[in-house]
Image (cartoon, rainbow, N blue to C red; front, side, top):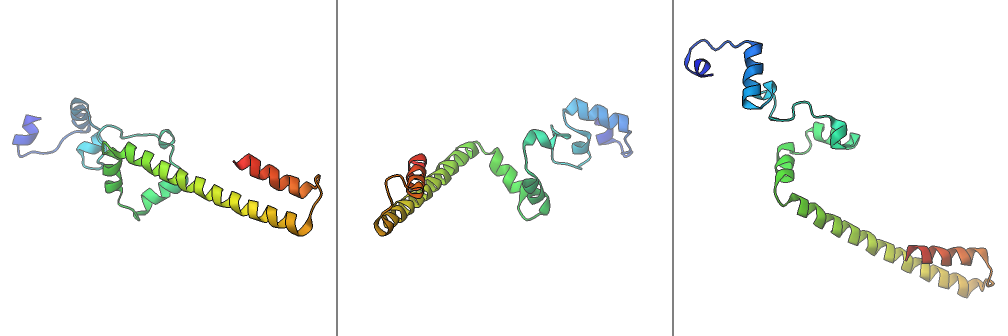
Length: 134
């Protein structure tokens, strides 16, 4: 390696590149400046569990993938995702509560307006739906 750094002759064989990459524990593509990935040059996408939509988004150039990688590598990123999940789940729960309230109002209006019998199928379905979502 010292010879390549000091001599004017900079031609290097592919065998030497492979040897140097192994010595440095990086990929040959990383040594040649073709990738920023040092340790996972042939990562299988299926192992990453990325959807087609996510892959297209990453390839589109519409988001800053360098910034996304830096964020994901941050020590507190997992905590951020957990907080987001709690927030989103809270919104979902709130929306379900809103729907249940709407169903209760609709059920009360139906009962008041039509006075269905105790064994009316539609009233039974409204009540069953309300119980299963609680």
